[in-house]
Length: 455
Image (cartoon, rainbow, N blue to C red; front, side, top):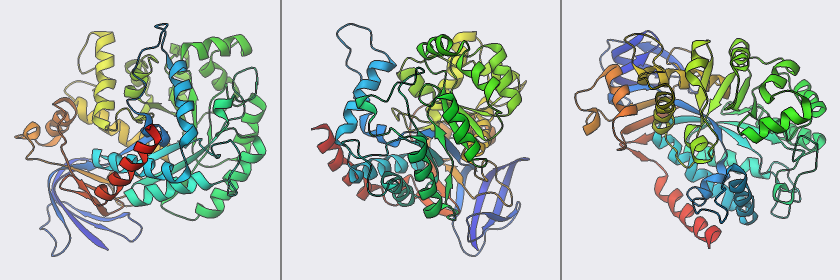
C-alpha cells in the first residue's frame, strides 16, 4: 500500500479537507479518509486536487507536425483536405524509433498538463514504403513503450482503414502506411491481445477509422468480431463528408450510423461536428460519448459542435488533443465553452444549471465521459477507482486566494501560466513541482529526432 495525503480534494460528494488515501499495488484507491492527520510516510499535497482528465483522442505522430501547416496556399483555399496531404507527406520519414521519441515527448507533455490517460487512435501501422513490419504490432509496441516512460495510462485503439472514400476506392499513395484489410486488422488485434491482453496498464479497443474508410459490410464484420471493449470512430467532421455520405447512402453520417449500428456506451464518436437535432437526440439516447477536440477542430476549420443543445438532451462528451496543436485540457475546455458563447451570445453556457461552476461542470464531464471512452475505472476519486490525480499550485498568481470550485474556474478561465504542480497516475507520483521525472532526457531525444524529420 502507498500513502497519499491531500489538504483539499474533490470527491464525488464535493470538496473534502485533509484526506488520507491509500493506494493498492494495482494503482487503485483502497481507502479514503477525510478529516485525517497526515500519515507518517508518503507525499502530502497542498493545492486543490481532483481526478485526472483522460485525453480520449490522440494521433501521436502528428505531434511532430504541430505548427507546420500554417503557410497559406496559392489558391487561398486551404482546408482540412489540403492539410491532410501535407500530413501524409510528412509521414514518409518517420521510423519506428522516431515515432517512439515523438510519442514519448507528447505523453510527457500530456501528463504535465493534467491528462492522466490517453486513448491513442493509432493508424500508423506499416513501414515507410507501405510494407508491413515483420511484427505487425511494431508501431503499437512503440506507443506502449512511450506511455510507460511517460507514466500515462494507455488505451490503444488500432485503426481499420481499408478504403479512401464512400465509393470503396482503394487507399491512396499517402495512405499506404495505414491501409489495413479485414484480415490484416484481425491479425493485428490478435497480436495485441496476446501481448497486452492481460496487462492491466494497457486497455485495448478498436477504431474503424470512419464510414468513408470502412465499407458497411466490413464495419458490421469487425463490430461483430469485437463484442467487448471501446469502439472509436471519426464521423461528420467535415461538411464534404456529410455531402459524400448523402450521395452514396442517402443518409447523413450520424443518421446512417444510428440506423445501422446498435450504439451504446462503448462507442466514442469523434468530432460529430455536423449534426441535426434528431441526430443529437439519437446519440444522447444511446449513451455514446462524443469526443470533442476544439483546438484541432478550430485549427482545421472543421466547425463547431452544438454542445449546449447536446448537454440539454443529456448527452456526454469528453475531450482530446487530436493533432496536438495544443496539449492542454485547459485550452480544450476553455474554447469549448467560448465557442458556445460566441454562437449563443450567452455566458456560462455549459455550466448545466443555476449557480454552478462552469469550470467544474466542464472538468467533471471530461473526467467521467473520458474515462468511459477509455474504458478505465477513473474520472472520480472513490474506493475501487484509479488513483489518477492532478494537484494545482495553490500559490500560483492566477490561483491566489482561490479554493474549491473557484480554483477550477480560475484554472480554466484565468490566464495561461502553467499551474499544475503535481500529477499522480495509478498512485505513482509522475510530475512533482511542475517537472516530469523523465522530461529532460525525453526532450533531448525529441529535439534530435525532430531536427532530422524537419531537415
